[in-house]
Picture 1: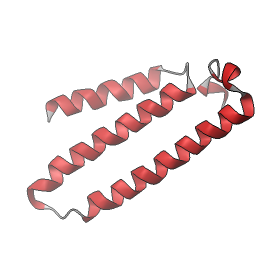
Picture 2: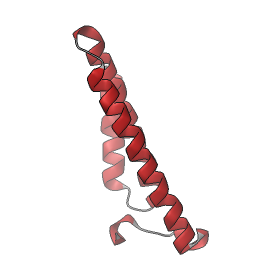
Picture 3: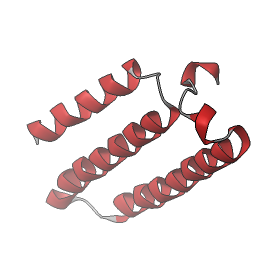
Picture 4: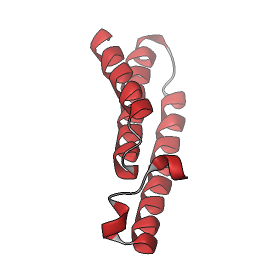
Length: 91
């Protein structure tokens, strides 16, 4: 459990520091969501219902689909060459 906490902390710090690439930020956000999913799973396995976990999983999948559509639309609109230099602080 402590290793998941340190991995989560590392992902959050790298997200807060990393404003160099939009795609890297989306990948870091997805890894944070998956780590939270694993932590919820470990906590809810002990004595609680799994309904909360399923609601979170549905939210995670829909949020991932929205992030992917934003990524595809921005690559389509700005092009692949200028997309590599895109900065998150410009949004």
